[in-house]
Length: 163
Length: 163
DNA sequence: TGACGACAATATGAGTTCCGTAGCATCGTC
DNA sequence: GACGATGCTACGGAACTCATATTGTCGTCA
Image (cartoon, rainbow over all chains, first blue to last red; front, side, top):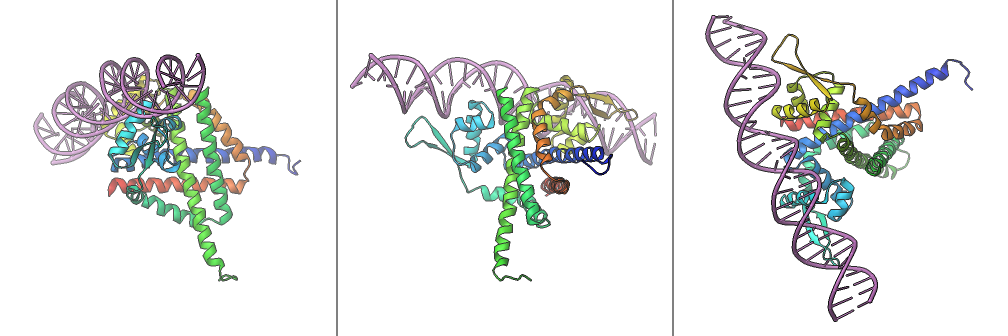
């Protein structure tokens, strides 16, 4: 297939090293973002898990404690405590479901989001500056890779939960 | 500069939307990876913070509890408990520093890494398959973006710690 | 209409973890 | 040889996670 005999082996090795580089960078990125979240969480009196739940509530619309527990892989009773703290801190509201009076819908309050946005301002500006250095097609590639990696992570987590 | 008058505004709007897409994907990726770590941590009886510390020890070579505390943004006394659990679980060893007998060096034991690798196997395979779909230059761009984003996260965390 | 099982959320108690302070051992320097 | 400084850990209080049991509500069937 190839015009040079040794290029196939070299090619494969280089590809593997390249993929390894991407994976290492991904792991380090994950670690560093966790740390950043931990720091920011310390500023607003939110634990890491609380922070994750708040993000889920804000991103995936209003949802019930059960759905949140399933999504976060936590015990329903744990969600009660988390929502208690989030509600006391003024981050979310607990509302009774209009028709099903057993159910509760947790809704994010947009008020304190500005506070969070200010804490993330530095990171946000850095990302804007970083994105500005890439071309359109490159940004498309990056966004696509991030989305697909997210989906892979979701699938891996589901597999672990099931198996 | 541009040959079409209205393309500038459209271009800027499209660029901003593209950058927003990247940032949203990044946030969701961070959330999903945190969840995956939480699930995997549950399999090996490791808390999220313990997991982060173990990753740091394995990646940044043997280091002292103080250095680890500084790097992770945790109280030194907290590190003692974390290292206790890691040591009891057979993940790391506590060794006396050869010359400075006050100091302790925490070293990762490679033994149980295979166990971790098996838990990450699904995610690892998905990432390999994902990387295989991109060209060399695209993978370079992705790795570069990830590294620079990591650096931005580190800078943002440092700013928060200082200010 | 009334009764039954199923579902959703929360109160409670046990076990564990995080952090602040104090204490011990050791190093570098004078 | 003595002194302050450094590095780590023991101890106590406060907070968190989780499992179980309880309360209130819904859907269904006789």
